Image (cartoon, rainbow, N blue to C red; front, side, top):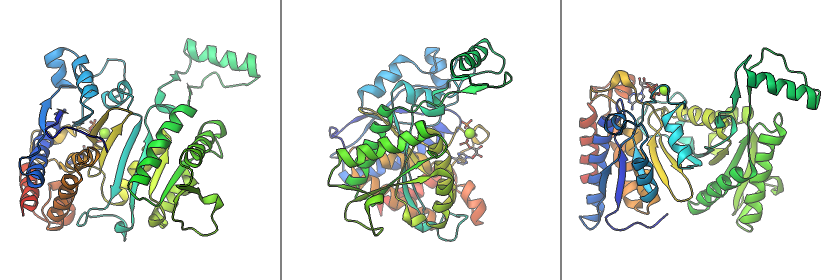
Length: 389
Ligand code: ATP
Ligand code: MG
């Protein structure tokens, strides 16, 4: 974890849709946990910064330079989901923010919260942390539309240069995966695994089909793991039995991984993936513990970290005080762990768990459980009661 002053300034973005409501509720919970643990000796000075619709109103720009600078200069920040305005030349404001700040590691711990209805028999067996590469792969956004000048040029080039015939009515896309980006996210995943006493890191890939992108990802990841963390890490390929004192690094082909995580969830721990596989697996494992919209997220770079919930703005719920703030609350808990306030993170997680276990929840979960739903703020107040207890 990194060092911060006793009263750090932490910027926050209230966000769009349900964003402001869940931010208000979450902040009550965070402040309560901080004062419970530090009794006034430490506190966060929350500083509102703007992105999305509110930023368009104030600055005429959904992503003002002030906002980017604030996030860069304060080391940790937290945000609610944002609506992407149309016609700005990018597909998602949330993705744009990660790219501008070079937040190359998308981290999602996925663990069942007792009391949450889950579709599998033993959701408690799953306890993984996903490290998804956040900057390249097909998300680099290099595509050419069917029939465009660019697509024609590329198709001609491929025919002339490689004697490769591609149908003229094809759309085209590129999937860049670099040694640089693969190695830096691998370092983050291994460091995290070692610092948190985790058992294994599994590299998930489709290297059998895409040798020089996904296949190379695996080789580069092993290289970093085995050369830069010598003595602390061992490759599964060199083990006779599936246990070791050292951190085990293994790899699985993505299609098989989706089966294995359902069949043998306890065999997996830290998961390391390129961008697209990471996107798929994150949602699949979150669903497995009933946690889509409940699991927290962090986007981390070399000097900057931005914490955010994994769900979107859910505009149809906005303004009704019914949205579930859990994903954001737990993203805050991750942020406190990250700055070394581990007791704060832990007390928040315990209180959320106790609240849900006691059958106190917002309508999205209450509906499935057949219990009376709480409003967003009421739910936060119940969590706070458990923190203060
Ligand atoms: P966006 O366009 O920003 O992605 P969205 O409505 O698609 O917005 P998602 O997070 O993708 O948002 O959510 C899909 C659906 O899941 C929502 O429409 C809503 O019904 C539900 N949902 C998402 N987040 C929450 C939440 N925090 N509390 C309750 N329901 C939620
Ligand atoms: Mg959505």
